[in-house]
Length: 475
Image (cartoon, rainbow, N blue to C red):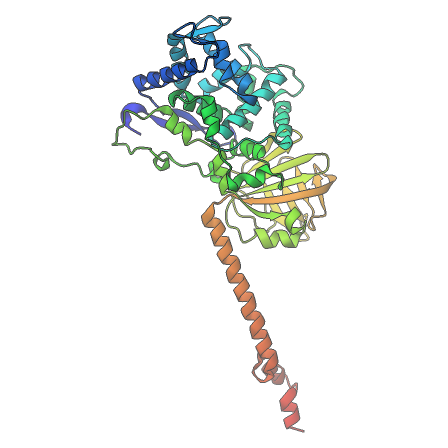
């Protein structure tokens, strides 16, 4: 980015996933002009007419937010008004609106964003209730969907995941303060508010009404399977995973690869902070995930699993669904392989999605898959040395063990996260294997048809065994 406009730096959450820390500094005049233009567009939507020129009523602002986002509009108005010191006022002046909007889009650090949106979703309180938290998670997901220009669809599976996140946050407590939320986010969902802040900045900096944001959404064919319920992995689950997984699974572009980004020697006074935020749309990046294996489609079988997965040389996600409403995701940053040693790099994760959402284990040497050695437990073993063995799938895929408790195994899916190049390499490998198998079959048929050219015939004769034509010729 241009040196005069700051820089992008990043930090990592406790789980190692990259989070945005600073963005480029916006041009204050262009920023204020955009927010002022939004104020004027909102004024024109007033049902009661512009009886107070230069002021915007609470009703007019809230009515710009439709459907599930209406409550978010109420919270946002209250939060913007609180910055004027007049929380209970039913109108906000043009100057106060611009000042509040400028303050929002100027929050570049993740820490500042978390504190701001904690206050917003708590309604100004010093704590979140479970109802507040569920709304916070749900709205965060919807706004990421909106800013990613994807059509929102309600899915009961997503609501279960969001409820599981709230259960994980609160435990046995009834309230959650900001410090406790930040601690939970750092481990389990460091980028939860990236979609919220992205959406808000896009509205304010781009002078877009919320309804205009909705009009830009479209069906994305690559994500339709997540939405229609054909797979274990729903779109809400994909959002939760994409917001916590390291970059090797989501292929986050570096600053130089972001469309519209500048080289260090270039300067552009029109660059604003939201350009970088647009590069942090995690959700669209799951379009590159490709389904390698599905027990619903291919059968719950070790042989079918091996056939569809072993030739894929990239990071993978294993979705495991079993008795008790449990669903786990194993994120493996290296290709799946057989052996008697635990393996996996620093970006491996074991994440429980249901009934409680949480990162269970993270780091290297998380997995072992033994199908041959009798000296070690056979099957797929998931859990680091020195920590509990969380999951074990027996060698025939008949049963799964959850902390050594046997459970009925319901479904399994494997998603490749290596992008198009890795997927195309797998397709070429399978095509080569198919051609080689056909060559071997054809060669075998030819040798059976012409026994005289079969090398086995010569070996037998060296051993003194008479064969076919040699035996007949000597009679």
